[in-house]
Length: 166
Length: 398
Image 1 (cartoon, rainbow over the protein chains, first blue to last red):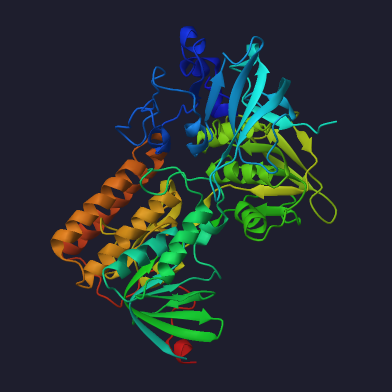
Image 2 (cartoon, helix red, strand yellow):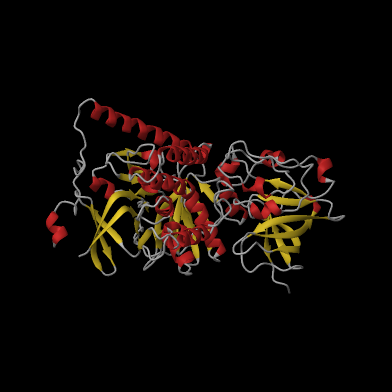
């Protein structure tokens, strides 16, 4: 059963297909494009200044990424109209990874703010901290929030709920 | 009552109508745009999400910003006259469009007309659907995104098409809780990326589920949802009680085609395109010569296709007025058709493609009948369906 189309949550198989090989994961930040359905859309390709997201032959193509060219800059995270791209850095720390998440809510969280980390179904899976906030381009661009998370959750965390500092 | 003569009258200033106007005006056509809204842009003025499509077109831009840009372009065009807050009431045999402006009733007579009236929201039946708190998704969007008013605290969304998914996301952005999205079909109707986006924010999307009833004394206080079996019947024992004060219906759109019926354009019922739609050719012209269509009124689709189809309708109207040389027309038309084909070529557009194929077949059948010496459709003759409000010259003079 295709869980993506029955629940909105991609299957483990879907995720495996957009996660780079282990050796690449150990080398530095990478983008993962969780866009599994052919729809007419191509801004991700045009947003990438390193040519890592391949040119579309057909506007409905599913984006293909060349991880050897991807620097994990996260420009595509803000560009994707479907908010379907994330950047993961598993080299961030001993225990922690860093995940870039597109964010379109106000107020924007601040650096240092603690957050509840959530998975693709919105379920809280752990605690993290906001490490960096890149405001969206004026007048209405998507912001990108980088959160640190336990390393084991690198392929699991795709959202967060800000917590009040107290 | 005054008479406003114009080369091209366009009814509807949504994405299709505005793009049609800009295209026609760019070829020197004196164009009058009629829209009942205060602002130009139709549904775009409340679409706060980023659009898909081509990077070189408006992909990645939010609907509200597209509306702003298009409105500015319209204001900067000396060939376009805008009649806003103005409703088109009816079309008469002599080509008169009766309109109600804030100042009163007027007549608009265009040498050509483009109908870009869009669509209206559908309703579904369930006990309690007349309670205050039951909204169409469009109304919720207008309240929130055009007027800055929250519709309530907690919402049940009915329908997982793109509108249901997008409005759910916008409700969350406005700080409103979305209890669930229910979808009667076995799979989510809209784009997976929209679905994943709200799922990540913790909103359950329940396929094969529908609303059984809404309850509440003076307004919606909750809703009972249940699961559906293979024959679309509710399964007793699967009921869930959701405490919500808003039930938002996003169960599809129907083309707003009354003017086309009045014109006598040949219409056909094509479910894949959303209901009764006009038969139209590759130039967006209906069987009523000089009357063109674009956007949802010609078949329910996305704003990106509406904008491209609008440009094509505007271009074709300009050409039929002798304003576009043949070679330029062929070139521009080919570009727009290629864009439309691209937008419609994915698996998500399979239904649209099959609907359009049916429509073309029906159009060919009508054209073949005319060629074979059947009754021609001279200008000024209405279609078979008689429409209230379109049948008397006296009404115009009154």
